[in-house]
Length: 277
Ligand code: SAM
Image 1 (tube, helix red, strand yellow):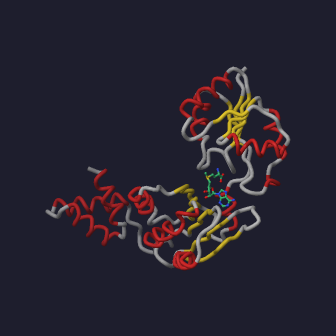
Image 2 (cartoon, rainbow, N blue to C red):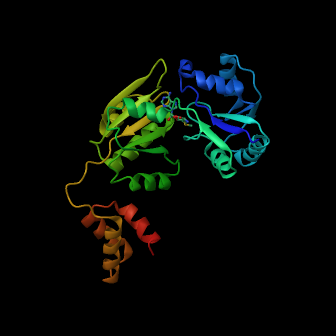
Image 3 (cartoon, rainbow, N blue to C red):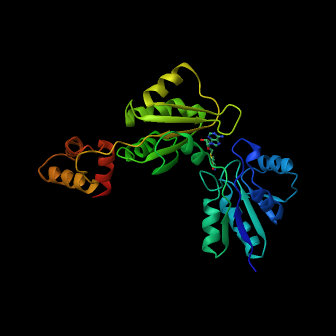
């Protein structure tokens, strides 16, 4: 009989957040697949669990995934852990889950710590509808494309960010969403220096002019206010671009005018018009 894959969330700071069920699953698994075996070994030592660890991370998942699958198909139970939080959420695991699902293996996720949800819940921003955006790319163009694609997003947006990139990211967010958009910077969640700074993008940029960001951050950004105007769809805006091009305008000028008339961000509209060809 085939074994199973368990996704086991681990604390994002406070070791007290490991649940009884996570502990039991780690104890009962035949082996544990870990993002960084040294990090997970510390947790296992703390829990007084002795178990075989295999490595499964970003750069070995293509080779390690099939080996783990083979063991599960042979009847073993695997518990997957990442360095902190919920496996598969901006962490290795997504591909292993897909591989197991494709091969008919039962995958069970144990609920537990996740920085995104912890931050959203204390952000003070609307939680009814939200989008998880993960990390912004380090590539300037991809990052700006990503932000442009969120220009009209009305749902609350959640981003992960590393402290050394925070100042730049705040500048990019400021340029994309304007100074008055509310943001909650959730820092060092569940740890001794947990802090939530609820401010605006301008307020956040000013605050970090004076000091360097420290620790781990989740950024929770307010969505766009619903527009009172009837909404123009991307298709409408692209049709307008096509109309202007047919009238003899260059694509660049057509996009510029259509962006002005519809309120769509110029760059996003330009990219979409290229794809639309
Ligand atoms: N899988 C994890 C989860 O469920 O949240 C996320 C892993 S991702 C590689 C790491 C990022 O999560 C960090 O760069 C930071 O943005 C966020 N993060 C993790 N722990 C955090 C904490 N204690 N406080 C604030 N943000 C945290």
